[in-house]
Image 1 (cartoon, rainbow, N blue to C red):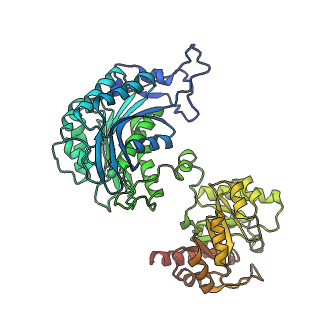
Image 2 (cartoon, helix red, strand yellow):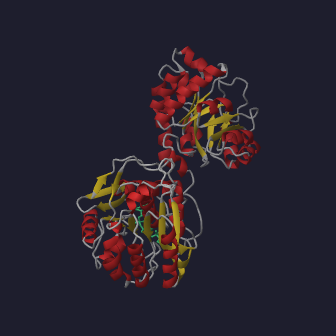
Image 3 (cartoon, rainbow, N blue to C red):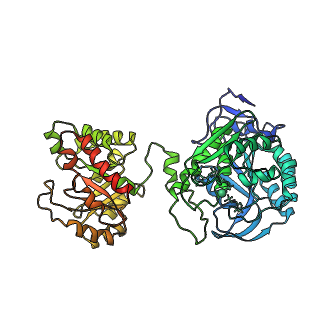
Length: 547
Ligand SMILES: Nc1ncnc2c1ncn2[C@@H]1O[C@H](COP(=O)(O)OP(=O)(O)O)[C@@H](O)[C@H]1O
Ligand SMILES: Cc1ncc(COP(=O)(O)O)c(N)n1
Ligand SMILES: [Mg+2]
């Protein structure tokens, strides 16, 4: 059930949800806390200067020493979404990427003491539960929630860890069914937990997940999310959301990674965080799912521990995509595949503007663009760069500026490419900050290592073949390119005289960090930029897909 508040709501924090639509929570049917939260007033009754209540989630869960799941995942998820998170610890586990080596439940009376400490003092908006090791703890939690009602209750019915270890006594099922689920606004079982809640029902298909969600709904929660992380591997990561009326299929691409420890805890915490900000349930679940998918994608290659199930990173690069989706998400070496570098002389010769040239290159499949203007006035260059940033950003293609850090700053480009005699990458990094992309031209292994030490993101290596763009440039050939790639700790893009005819020979030199080719004449000293780009793109895709 929902209703609309039409009065003026004071803003809590700048990122606070402002749409005045609030759902009456299940867990506080008898309370109007949800409204007092949204209209918090100073102690002296002055509404003109509202108290800055930060949205607040309390997690009641177990500690994971490896920090992939449990309380630690909850803290990170809430932190990443800008929500305060307090913690009531129900058990301490000795846990790592291999599994759970030990569980040490916190005495029930002390769990209750923690609950009372937090709930009696702080303005908790949403309670999220994870590992609840005993019936006694469930009962005490329900008692506390009745005493201190909150806006919403998110129940992650943790029973068995992803590694297969038991985290709650099976007798807990009775307490879940009879006490906790009837109070919950949402319950988020994975396939095994959904099956256990339903007395061992087989869950294999999406249709099974739908009927399980409906059956669990009958136990009393307002909404049910049956999570499909454990569906067989080629299937997308599909979750089923049931709101009492409709079953929604929520689909995300399945990230190929073994770093999935803590996905369930993170998902539930993100739902709680979004609810605390004022979101409705379905959008909260959608944001949460997107968060998990993005975090898994960013973390797919990180290695923490030697076991089969690694944790993922809740923060790295994520802030950018969450808080400013118009800003591209950091450096991806895959972007180096078809690197287009503009040349004003060539484009003038073919009577087209640089912006048209950039549009055409992107249309043909350029994966990154560098603006290289050796003669333009600074003001003209900045204006041109601003237009190109707009074009590139609309297509999700990064735009780098050759040499001119000031121009890159002025147009908020994605980064800068510098040569050996330009400003040192170390200074460029200090000026641009950690988020921007920095590339460095290198001919030798020593230069490549220096670029890495100076904080660059990639190197451009060449000239591989002779080129008219740089008349007196010494060429290093394919063997020189291979030597530099082998020494480089950074991804490499090859440059110099590369075209449709020789791109394959370059890409096949056999060093995995060679990620693409950079081209000028092969695209821009041609009549039809987009079709030339397309041809080169198909050569590159062919090489990459056969690797
Ligand atoms: N490899 C993956 N790629 C994308 N999403 C995933 C992946 N594995 C799990 N998820 C998602 O993570 C969330 C948690 O699901 P799941 O892993 O099934 O829960 P639990 O951790 O409780 O076992 C779900 O939204 C699920 O779809
Ligand atoms: C303390 C604790 N709580 C919960 C989980 C579940 O982890 P997952 O989210 O991977 O199922 C866990 N492994 N440890
Ligand atoms: Mg999991």
